[in-house]
Length: 227
Image (cartoon, rainbow, N blue to C red; front, side, top):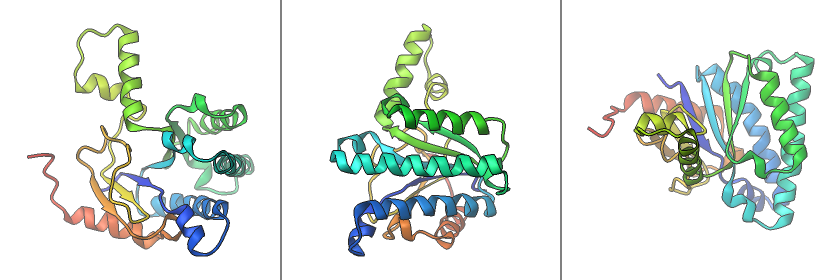
């Protein structure tokens, strides 16, 4: 049974361009889809989501685009914090939010919102949502090695590295929307035995049936774990 689903949220800008909309409109539509996704995942029995929300490469985009994304993150995080405070949404108030990546690279106000989201949901026992934020798979492994060296660990094996990664769990499924068929430095260690699904559909057009199809397809496959 699928417990952990990871998704590369690709296609927001192309979605906007195809509709002659400003690029930021595509990102806002994508953020709305994330809200829907959390509900769909919960309904389909998924226990953990890991979402590639902002890569290390995204920092290299034009300043205006990066600024628009920061504004979007601020709006989204404040909205979730407001929902948590009101306590009216049963699903949201049980979600445990986590962020993986080089969070220190973000503006102070974004880091403060992230800290609040994590601290206010730390004890929740519902769906776990990991936002890969300022994330790069190679950077994650480098940072894991740095942690190990700093601890002075002498005996290093796969378990040692896994325990020092940002994320110490492995998704059964990785979905990439947007039509591209590459992994883009996303969870290279954790996705070694994951089943990958590449969809032509842009992220803002992703729906519950797409998620259900991926889960059903996974459950029909025979996982060999390299054997």
